Amino acid sequence: MTGGRLIVLGLSHRTARVEQREKAALDEAAAVKMLRGLRSAPAVAEAAVLSTCNRTEIFAVVGDAAGEAALACALVAHSAISADELAAARYVQREERAARHLFRVAASLDSMVIGESEIQGQVRAARDLARREGTLGPLLEQAFAQALQTGRRVRAQTRVAAGAVSVSSVAVDLARAALGDLRGRRALLIGAGQAAEATARALLGQGLAEVVVANRTPATAGRLAQRFGGRAAGLEALVDEVADVDVVISSTDAAGTILDAESFGRALRRARRRPLVVIDIAVPRDVDPRVGALPGVRLHNIDDLRRVAEANLNGRRLEAVKAEAIVAAELARAAPVT
Image (cartoon, rainbow, N blue to C red; front, side):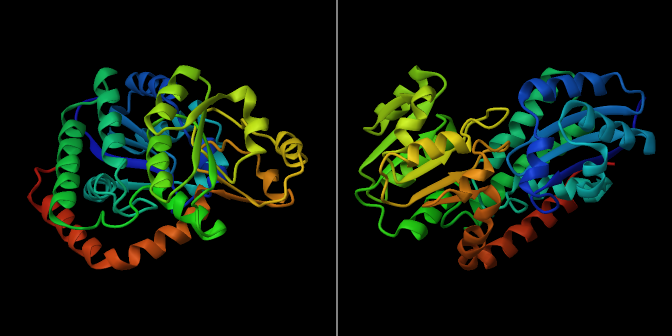
């Protein structure tokens, strides 16, 4: 088909609990397969996929309702979410509303943590993946460019990013609220990506005594641990490490659970006499939800961070209003996206 209108179909932390979002989450390989399938869909002219811990969205150019249906079918086919679950949690925005949604996402105004710093890179990566797969046509190219420009302007001209502005830093605030002073405490970070690095910085800023980094690739864990004066551990040693720390923060991109309740139980039976805070910021979740029922354990998933994030927003509400005005101005002066 040629031409069409811009739409976005997806779900987010605003419409779906973590249990649904983890089913809809797409790693890069699944996103590639989806884009390649949509490339041959007659009713879809362009498509890009954005999947983060808080949202899975397909931005597309479609001709009619058949195109919208094709997007929903593609998401069900390439993720673990069922058609009924998707129907209950999804939203669809069209034309100018779709463009405004993309602009707000790129400006971090639709994030769980308003002003968080990771989303611009994630939007850029979604655009680049669609470009490599040949599904980013002129309309989406224009819309993503304008959205990223809007995000840059919001960060440059407002203080909406003041305070705790990442999921990782909010997770550390949650640990501090649970344990009090973090000085002298020990933490285990599971995962060695950007979220783990940001978490390590925030933890050490609170005077943490030691950071242990566990990752499926030991060399990667070693490099991150060395950067912060900590030490590395393999995933096979998680039970031993859990027994000796006060905080566990997990942020891997694993497809499923990597720490089950039985493993945690074995760790806790090693004469442990202090509380353990476990914060699972991964989607799909890394930690078996049954861990939260173990004695002495306080388990939080990414949805539990909402309360802390909202508290941190209090001092930035006026800045968020300014940011919304920038989005409206950029949308008004943007070239038509329909």
